[in-house]
Structure formats: C-alpha cells, structure tokens
Image 1 (cartoon, one colour):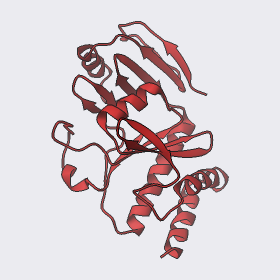
Image 2 (spheres, helix red, strand yellow):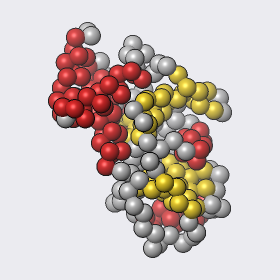
Image 3 (cartoon, rainbow, N blue to C red):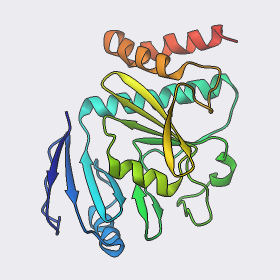
Length: 217
C-alpha cells in the first residue's frame, strides 16, 4: 500500500521510503520547475503536478517489476503486429503553467514518427504520448495532469487488475477495450501474464505470451 505524506517546502532534505508519496500544496509553476531541477534526472522517484499540487512518489520493487513487464507486453504485441513505436519510459511531460507528469512507462505509437530522435519533448509543438502506463498509483493529481497534457489512453494496473482509461472531452472514461489494440482483451490478458510471471519468472512468462501471440495470427 502506498502511504501519502504531506510535507512543507523546501524539499532539499526530503527522504522518502519506497512505497510512499510526499504531497506539496500551493506550489507555483516556477517552484515546480525549481523542484524538478533540484531533484535532477537520475532518481527513482516519479512526480505529478496539477492545480498547484505536487506529488513525489517512490515506487516499491513490485511496482517496478509490474510496470516493466507490462511495457514489455506492449512491445511484444507491437512486434507481433509489425508496428513501429518509440518508448519514452518515465520522461517528464509538461504543459507550460498547467501540469507535469512522469508516467511509469509511455509509448508513442500512432505518433511515433513525430518524436524519432528527439531528446526532449515540447508539448507546445509535439504530441503527447499515445499510451501511458501506471502501476499502483492512481491519484487525482496524476489524473488531472494527464488531462492537462491530453494523453489519450492510460493503463492503470493496481491490486491485480488492469483498467483502461480513455480521454473523452475533459475527462477520462473507463473502457473494456484498448483502441491501440482493439482485437485483444487487454484487461484480461495483462493481469494473467503478471500473475504468471510471479509463478515462473518474468522471462518465461514473456516467452509464453509471445508464443500465444504467434498462435493468434
């Protein structure tokens, strides 16, 4: 279980245990930018900022295993379908003066050509990721940040279940199908493979999944 901890600025001495979230309120955009610079890029924490609220989360090991495996499943499906993609992992996405978020994993699929070779994504000219993946954490701040950035599809894995959320106007709606992979029952498949990985190991579970994909052609 993730534990939320309210804190007061500044955060230079902040230490978070794995599985905890620090929340900062009334954070201006300039302060958010300064905090990002202070935290640096080489860290294991993830951030989300929206409407003056900043969340800093440090994931648990099981969180990391799940999100990496789910990202590997996405890549396996894309390979099997001979589709191109660009993975941007936990890159920081910012909508100037509005919001910022670091997904657990994310992919450019439909818009992959727009970001090939880019070291930085500028959402004033570049599209947002086509698919974001979140494991364990599903807070209002993160949801609002995704809304501001206009990520069209989010997969949220939590407590052994996968939810698909699609952007519709000014809100996200839950869906039983993924428009990115309409022919696959993603909410059923992903949890089964994650659970299988706990039984036989990640690499073997991925091999089984890839074998299954090849049989669907």
